[in-house]
Length: 464
Image (cartoon, rainbow, N blue to C red; front, side, top):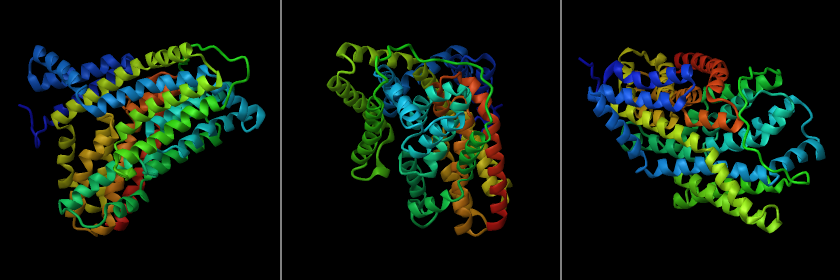
C-alpha cells in the first residue's frame, strides 16, 4: 500500500529521478537513463508495463503542445547554428587574435580562465545564453593554455544560474516576483514583492559562494581532471586572422534582442516579459542579422551560411533530446507529488531557527531530483512563505531568509543535477562529456552548499 501525502506517492515518488540520475552516472547514456526514469514513474502510477509505456509516450508527445517547451527546444537547436556561424565566419579566430595578439590581454592560463568568469558575470539575462557564450568564446584560449574542458564547463555553469539570481533583471526575477506577489495577493504575507526579493538576495548564499569558489580555483591554478574532449564540427578557416565583428554581431544582437522581446512581451515591463518567447525570438533574429552582416561583408556566400545554420542545428539535436526527457521526468515528478512528499514533514519538525536551513536542504533535494530550479521555486516558494509566516518568530526578519533559502537551494540542486538543462548546455558549450562535467563539478558545488547551509543555520539562530 503506497503511503500518500497530499496527492503524493510517498517515498516511491523519489524513485524516478533517483533511478535516472544513478543510471546516467553509471551508464553515461543520459537519454536512455531519463527514459527509464520516466517509465519507472508511470509504472508506479499505472501498475502495468503496457500502460506505463503508453503513458510515457503520451507524456513526451504532450510536451510538444506546450509553447514554452517548443520555444526552448528551438532556442537550444538554433544556438548551435549561431556557434557554427561564429566559427565558420572566423569570428572566434578574430576574437582570439584580438585579445591575445593585438591587445595582448590574455597571456597565461589564469587570464584565459578569467575570461569566461567575467563573461558569466557580465551576461545575466538567461543562464543558457551565459553558458553558451562563455564557453564558445573562451574554449580556444583555455585549450591553448591547457585548461581541461571539465574546468571550463565548471566555470560556465557556476557563473550561469547563480549570477542570474544575483542580478535578477531577467526572467528569473520575473518568476520570483510573481511567486512572491501571488502570496501577497493571497493574504499570506503583506508588503511589496520587489522589496522582499531585494532583501532576500542579500542572503543568497549559494550564489555568492559558488562564484567565489570559481574565482578561487582560477586564482589558485586548481585544474580539473580531463576525461573527454568533444570538439565542434570542423569548419573552414578564413585566410585572414578572422573578423572579431563576425563574433560580436551574433552575440550583441542576441543579447539586445532578448531585452527587446522581454520588453515587448512584458508590455513595457522587462520583469513581466516571457523568457521562453524572448530567447526563442532572439536566437532567430540573431541568425538573421548575422547572416545579413556576413553577406554584406562578403565573409560567407549564401550557400555556406545555410550549410552552417543547418549543420550547427544538427549538432544540437542530441542536446534537445536530452532536454525533452529532462522535461518529461520533471512532469512525472509533479504528477507523483515528489515535492509535496518532501515538504510534508518539514513544517512539523523544524524549529523557527532551523527553518532557513531546512528549506535550503529541501529545495536542493527537489531541484537535484527534478533538474529544474524554476520548478523548485514554483513548488517551494509558497510552502516556504507560508511556513515562515506561521512560525512563532520575527516574520520580518525570517521571511527574507526563507525566500533566499528557496533560491539558493533551487540553484544548488539545479547546478549539481545531471538532468538540469543548464548543466547539459554548460558541458556542451565547453566541449566535454556531461557526466564528466557533473563528477568534476560536484565537489565544488557541495562545498558551496555546505558553506551556505552553515550560514543559513547561523542567520537562522540570529534572526529567529
